[in-house]
Image 1 (cartoon, helix red, strand yellow):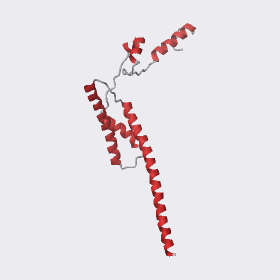
Image 2 (cartoon, one colour):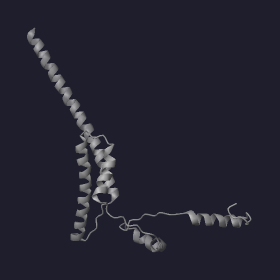
Image 3 (tube, rainbow, N blue to C red):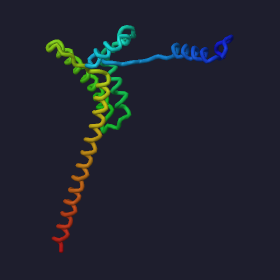
Image 4 (tube, helix red, strand yellow):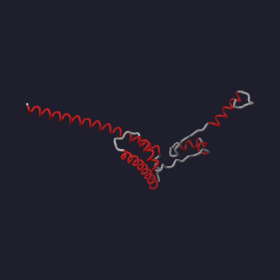
Length: 166
């Protein structure tokens, strides 16, 4: 149907399938050049590194970092005001930027590369949210225990006052 004038023989169908796959198949392969297996793979499969389109991802600007942290923290229930939440998102962006700068300084002084990627920034935000929830739950547990103890002390004081009257 796609190729008028051609019979539907097995050879023509196979050729049609091959042409469709070649025209429509796209492969995205992501590899880190810092991975120790990268040179091995490059030697085994030279076509992977000789003719691909390589996108080098540059560092995110601080405004983008703040925007990303704002997007992840905005819907997250924090026990604080909007001003503090805004300061937190700004601080998260600044921290990642400072770590990236320190990695560059480390490379200049020690000639050893350390990478801070966007994925590490997203992991930092996820770890913050997870730790915040854990610490908040522990704090609420301690608060409930202190309140229970205070209630017992108040009840004990009332009982002592009642025994003094009798």
